[in-house]
Image 1 (cartoon, rainbow, N blue to C red):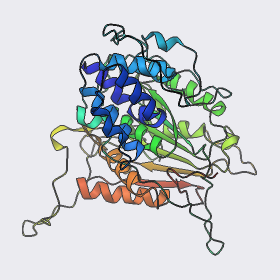
Image 2: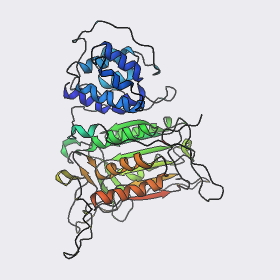
Image 3: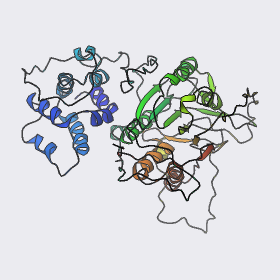
Length: 456
């Protein structure tokens, strides 16, 4: 199988696993000769969960020769998964069929196999519609076109997420004897993940953020397993970012929670808690400017809805300060060296501590109302004010690595604030030199994610 076809499967891995019917896809691929009768027995082994068998199926199909991708696209088209076909290969004839709900349908009728009866991926095609999960009654804003020739340096092994999300077995209940109540997260509209990632920058004004594609892929899989839908916005200009933020008010409706990830190069503002984020065209948008679109005046539909923001970027130009042990004090033998130092990168520009910071800017402020302007907001930063954030060019950023591992392992029994505490603990145990932080803006309840558990 060609590398670009493998990349297409890896990029849509979580959608393939979550949204396809295993028996229908296996039957279609068997009839097309992709798998033999003996080979498909492993996908009928009920000792494994159906999700694990589907994960195995889509990993194995990448090993089934140069025509397997075309047969997979054909099979998905015949089964009615046209949005998935569009994401895998927009040039496929099935990509132009009308979308419909993805319900499992009966076993497809066999048809003659033609190894050349498919179109390969074009290297300069536009990105497919990544907003397929939003109800048609509330269409999301259109995604700006992205140059798909931009390739990440992530290695193949990291493209398929290496973690498994543990599912909840029971709902956490409110306790009248405790002061803190729980946000409601029991329905099937569990929430939305908004992924704003900036990897490349016009005129090379910033270094390319190798590894950011790995972060996006891991977050996409993680939140899919947590029961969240996802909208991904990659490499937007400042004007495109603002236009997208303005239109989110029409998209974020009837959901129980929102996670927003912003990943780019970041810059501190002197004498301010604000932060500048670099957009693709080199212009800067501030953290407070982004947050303003989610306040209770601009997005009243989300009053009382938990809104979690994750900022993966530098917050200054100083490398992390660490306490260095005296020569006589040997480090504990069980602590490994930080991973990824061979390809260590920064989401900012480390400089000497005495470099003058940029001048502060004026804040616009806002009018007081009977409802607090900001509430139900939790902000997680990958690093502390004034310091850089570290990123491995192949494995992704240190913070997102730790976050995905911890959320996968503990979201079933921990509330979100505790999860972020464990993320910091995990990051320090693995890398020993970066400290994260969390701010709460009226985030006055406990948020449990209840992965895999839905109220009937």
